[in-house]
Image 1 (cartoon, rainbow, N blue to C red):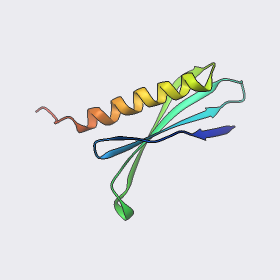
Image 2: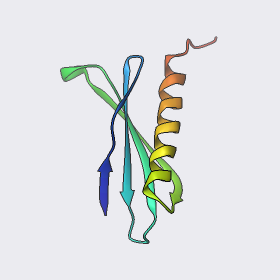
Image 3: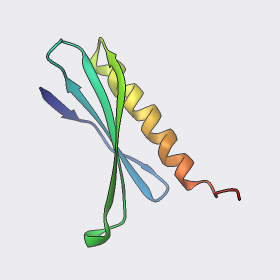
Length: 80
């Protein structure tokens, strides 16, 4: 499998890095890494998505859309 690292996107205090992996079946898997903090206090959250895609671009768009949405939701104040 080959994983392609795409351009990262800043969302508030988070850095969203979409990843696309070519699978053995010829389809593409999408995932996103959401990073926060710096140095020894860096925290990474990895999102792996279930759908498989026919094109690398479709997988990249899905990873970007869902990664940015997840990071944006983490910036919203929590209701109690």
